[in-house]
Image (tube, rainbow, N blue to C red; front, top):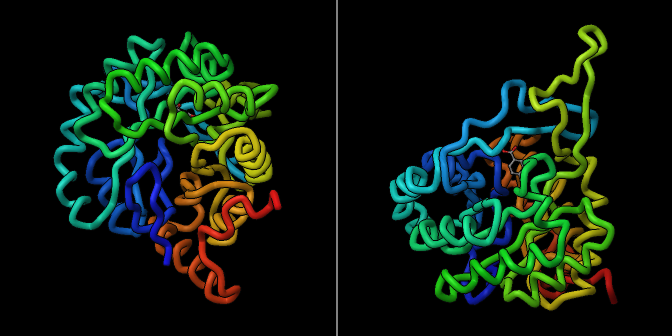
Length: 305
Ligand code: DHB
């Protein structure tokens, strides 16, 4: 009932693991696959090994979390070993793999994309981390020309493999960025990355709590902002949209689909409902479709009618 085809690929359901959660090792990804995710997304991986920020890298706030991990990862050459280990098992389970990658420019993105491409089904370009600094993350995704050049460079080097751009909500006009990545040849858009950045100060020590001082906001509180961004993107481009931001229940996923998402990703929700959140959300979505006697594809974009 939940089978979804995106860019010619069949997904057993449209509820995917988002980048940044349980994606540091192959075994963690496999665990999310076993718990019902239709696809699992890796942590964002770059060209070289990166240690990440000092602890604490995450702090809970009302309605969500602030995080600034600092893109910790072992570098792409090392990381593909993690995927290699679990690829066959995930294939047997019918779980697709999304490789999230980052870089500082088109050249770096292309190198990482070329290396990860044979190991994954879909590539996700992280051009939206709000606290990466330098020329990483949102520095790219806030600029239509830079976003265009990264997407088109990666499309040129991955031999027709689907490439999605993950966008930041921290822009004046998300439609402009969405049109620019569509024009560059993106196959899909993932929206949204974390909001902000924000800060929490410990009033006893008088210091910001996060090691990086500030970080991106995720969790339930950002859902209305994610919904509005998906709604706007749907009205601006023809590309399939993967909605992400504050989804914890099946009905949240349905709301994203009404806004225009064809699939969703779940990240912080894992902390709220446990590893089996994917199975739970799928069950809740099915129940909704049965009660209303409708098909999933008939609700995508329904809020625009
Ligand atoms: C990190 C945070 C993000 O929001 C993101 O998109 C990528 C990386 C991090 O801190 O590692």
